[in-house]
Amino acid sequence: MSAPLLRCHGVSVEYGHGDARVVALREVEMTIEPGERLALVGRSGSGKTTLLHVIGGLVSPTDGIVEWKGEPLSTLDVAARGRARAAGIGFVFQGSNLFPHLSAFENLAFAARASRNDRPGPGPSDLLALVGLAGKADSLPGELSGGEGQRVAIARALAQRPELLLCDEPTGHLDSDTGERVLDLIDSLQSQFGFSLVTATHDPDVAARSTREVELEDGSIVREGTFA
Image (cartoon, rainbow, N blue to C red; front, side, top):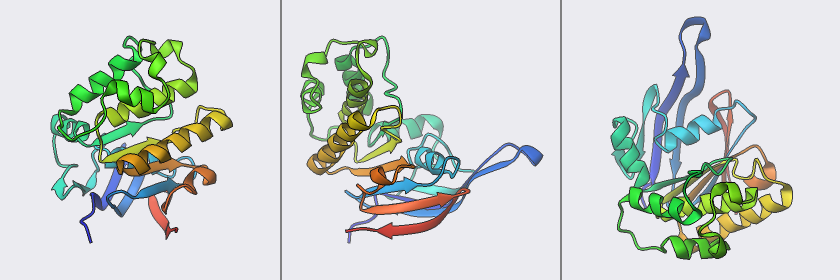
């Protein structure tokens, strides 16, 4: 059996002090396996977005360790975490979060340069074609619809050639039909490229697309399930 791609050991996150202290995560133990589809579920405020950010190296845990491919990630300094993230972990947020002054093509090219990895994979033009936006290469984010912007964001994440793709409510700002098409696209690309996929969601229909589900409540994992 292959080693986990990522592992959380006793991960806790706290914000504030005294009466203002908030515990966002409590001693989380979790692994992410190569190529799997994992859903993080729970109500708003359950800790799923915080866990996603810890997994991706955006937030350092107060206690515990995150290991990426067997090496510590959470104990690295900010710059080193950023390099590790760029080289193997892609993000898709609720909003597209594209650079507004760069075209669709330029957003992808910037992500590809930042990753500095030599794993084989399609270039920016090919990725835009894969997400059905070959004709929008020169468009600025403000000229794209919500669904188009999210597809560019997915292509930008794939431009890093990630081994792990993290999605935080990727359809949260989209209508239901556009959201379904975006989810179908993510699933198709995951099958094609084989990256691990972790999606934080409160929508049971989105979670049902995964093969494993982890439920959080008040910062703790309260349930795990594996599906065929």
